[in-house]
Image (tube, rainbow over all chains, first blue to last red; front, side, top):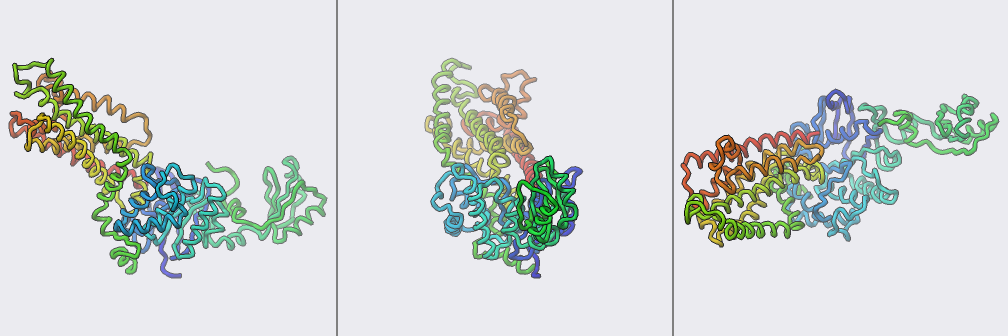
Amino acid sequence: MPTPVIEAAELVKTYQTTNAVDGISFEVAPGESFGLLGPNGAGKSTTMRMVGAVSTRTSGSLSILGMDPNEHGPEIRSQLGVVPQTDNLDTELRVRENLLVYGRYFGIPRATVAKRADELLEFAQLSDRAKAKVDDLSGGMKRRLTIARALVNDPRILLLDEPTTGLDPQARHILWDRLFRLKEQGTTLLLTTHYMDEAEQLCDRLVVVDKGRIMAEGSPLSLIRQYSTREVVELRFGSERNQDAATTLQGVGERIDVLPDRVLIYSEDGEGALAEAIRRGLEPITSLVRRSTLEDVFLRLTGRSLIE
Amino acid sequence: MTAVTSRAGAATASGVRFERSKRWGAWYVAEHELRRVPGYKWSMLATAVGSPLLYLLAFGVGLATLIKTGGSAGIDGVSYAQFVIPAFLCAGALGTATEEFTFGVLLGYKWNETYLGMNAGPITPRQIVGGHILFTTLRMTATSGIFLIIAMAFGAIRFPEGLLVLPAAILGGLAFGIPIAAYSTTIREDRGQFAVIGRTIVLPMTLFSGTVFPITQLPVWLQWIGWISPLWHSTQLARDAAYGHAEPGWLTLVHLVVLVGLIAIGAVVEVRLATRRLNR
């Protein structure tokens, strides 16, 4: 593995008495696309802020681009691109102006910024909105402008905190396409998300975080292999009968999960498990055999109860 | 490690120059804020030109006929308009500063979150604070400068000594505004605190700072408001420049020390609070 651009070891961040981040260690290689997955309040954003050199760690060690953020915060930040959870564009400026003023913060000469702004508007598919007011943009457009702004300094690492939360499917897919292009160009991506499909689309490697700790680490595929089965059968019997059906299904597949609305059978052979269920005399209202996804891994690791 | 540091030091293909943002960061912040000005240039210009004309009209023509102190000469041996115009110029600068260091500060932390965006880049809290002070100073220079030119054109302020009215007014605005900025930095929820500042601090301060009458007219137990008021100190300096009223040299020095002291202490506290707020 080449020298990592991010090295975090036993990272801790304490607010008053609670540990928002409670001993997280990971490394990200140059050009890698790395994801932090976890439910709300898991410590993802706090970790992002520490990596972004705007939040001082309570303990542990952290090195970004070979530098300690406690010592070289501004210098590190001059080589990062940051897409925060909520867009903090200047709504009093026009679209293109947002890129111009932001580029200046990196000491980029005026003429270079102007050229770069036009390229980035092109990349973000916002060229025709260059003179628009920020408030007149849709949610997806604002997000793309924020990403364009984060790229103004041609960053070595791009930090994305829940990049597609709140966007409609079209806007998400456009955004994924843009992020995938950056990945192809070799930009290191560090992103947080609670969308499993997003993680599968974009991450080479990821960690599942819960309550400030890492629960699992690996590529999407290896995590599915490790924490789930190849296939999942979803059976619905009606909420009254699910528990009884689960008893009858005892021993089918590798694991059974009873949810209020359905029963899940985790199995290497979904069709076989379904056939076995029917052979045991069960008559599901609906049945579905599908491949395991990261969502199955995620729910297994972080539990199904709502965390708020 | 070596690759990283050399990249940070020299210009990259993208044109990033960390050394420049380290040196000029505060100016870039001011530049950002200046870019917003075209959005409200007309309201700014109308206030800058309109208020001095109104004051000249009201106090030069209207109120002055009512107030006859000591025969032909008014207070300090000058007409009432001459007495009151430098004070209004200072109060105007202080009003601009108050606006920028209350709403302008919370805008950056909360409503527009632009400070968070700057700080996600290489800009430090100190540079953000410095840039906003720089921008506010430029804004006061523009609006109070227009006021000063109009007042000079009407002969209400002498030329060229009267040019020093401008720095006096700006010092007053900063001496009041920067400590207020420190307070604004601590506000998480807007519960109308700024309206309270306006009513319980700015208004009484304007009334009791020798703006429309000398504080010596007040009973001694009320004069202290003037002594601790940045507006009184800047107004007295401005009057000295505008028509050269008789005040001992040591008192002029006191005015300067108080104003510069408030600015220095306010700035140290404000940088500390901004650093704490932005480091989350």
